[in-house]
Length: 57
Image: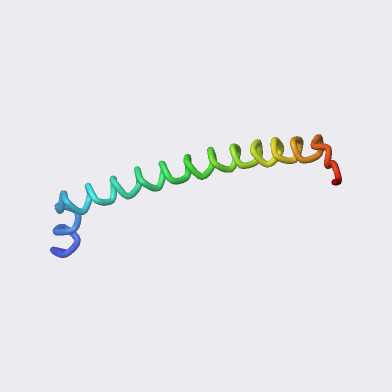
């Protein structure tokens, strides 16, 4: 029981967990944003590629 009280009373551990949760939240938001950006970028490149005229020499 004293071990649990030490863990709960340890402020450094709680702060580390909070920072870990914040970092995870930022990572999830960044991944979601990059996924949307990647889809838009892919569509843009596909449009450019399909509208290019290739001339032979």
